[in-house]
Length: 178
Length: 178
Image (cartoon, rainbow over all chains, first blue to last red; front, top):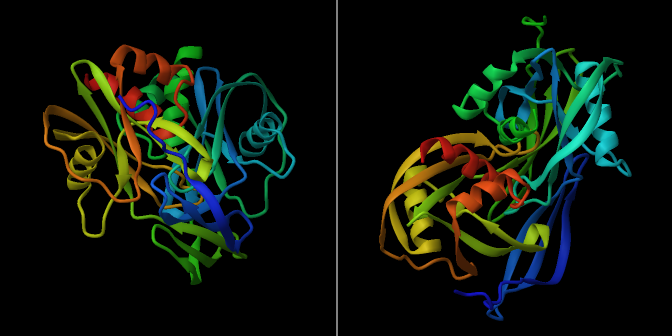
């Protein structure tokens, strides 16, 4: 095996190519393990949360238009973390904004969504003890709440019935906790 | 329920902010469902594949340094789709490059990795009938092959033992096929 193979890349210099509302794009020149140089393009992202929330055996989901993929999706409630916001606080806020419910949150998974080009970290929470406590959402968010029986959500997650990674992964990982 | 709620956003105009080796960053002005306008930042990505490949009950994985997240990761073999390349051909090529094995491929899942900011589509394949047939990899890729017993890989996937979405999701979805 190759336990001692050198893999790390070292940053030599970098530039910010774009700083936007949501994303920052950077390009770094790096030294590769073999001593040569290469360029790396990186999308810096503030991180995000997603929430598995069941109310009376039904999974709370949101239908929304996702502009980057040009279509409506049915996803678990999710959103990006605000500056200085803790993932837990973000999970509570997003669930209230998108579904109207407050929940007690337990973090069940943390992962990189796309380590090949972005540093986005996704925190998945399982909500329990839901109570009605809505919070107004951002002006430019348009979503519709839908409820899917948990058994059906599990079946859809296993059979390509949902189309975004965090929704499929959140449901499959939550199964062991519910 | 809100079955008829209007959700779609319409493109008014757009600009390419950056065109790189891997990514293209665009910013579009869009019309929202309520008639107002907003800006959307989109990362255009060529798409990618990931492969679940078992050889003698062990999952073939690659250890590599992921510059965007600044650390080594242990992932299933994966890579981005070349121009005009079909996902199936890409899966065969990436598995040969990263592990040395050729496999018969079955696509078991397709999903968006990050529909909130990117159009990247990930195709997950399950490889079978592996035979040794290596292919030289890109000059700037440095990876080390590792083999993880399948039962251990499943346990790690369920318990935050891996840190990237496609690896966890690929393993959990493959379970139903193996």
